[in-house]
Length: 177
Image 1 (tube, one colour):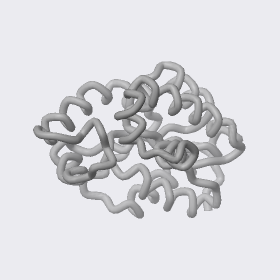
Image 2: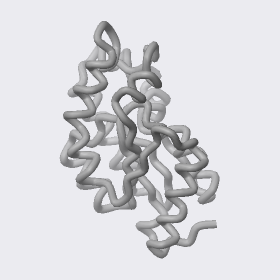
Image 3: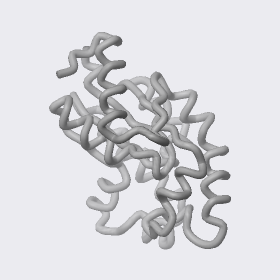
Image 4: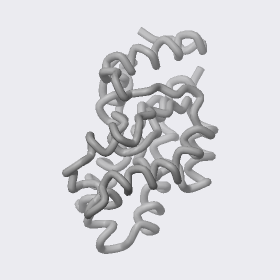
C-alpha cells in the first residue's frame, strides 16, 4: 500500500507537526521532511526573509513546488507549513498522494507555544494571540477537509500523538512497526 507510506501532517504553527513528524518518521523507518525547513535549506533564506523580500504569494509558489516534489517520494513523513493548505493545488496533491493527519490545538495553546518565535512572519508584531485566532479561523476548514485523522495536541506529548497515528495507520491496513 504505497499511499500509506506517505503521511502528511497539516495544522497551524505550534501544533507540533515538526516534532511529531520526526518521531513518526523514526517509528515508521521513513524519511522526514519539514517543508519550511526544506525551503530554507534550498534557498539559503529564512521563511521570514522570503516573506519580507518576495511576499507571501511568492513563498506559497515555492512551497507548492516543493510539496509537489516531496509527495512523489516513495515514502515520507512530511510536516507542511501552516498555510500550505491554502493552495488548492497543494490540497489536491496531499489528498491524492498519501494519508493526511490534522494536528489540532486550541488557539490559546497555539499562541502560547508560538509566542516570541521570530521565524513565523505571519505571527509577528502586536496582537499575537489575535493573529493566531484569525489564521486558525481562516485555515481550519482546509485542515478539516484534508484530514483523514484529527489528533488533538493540546495535552498530548509528541510520543502520544505518534502512538495515536500509528494505531490509526494499523487499522487502515498500513504496516506499522
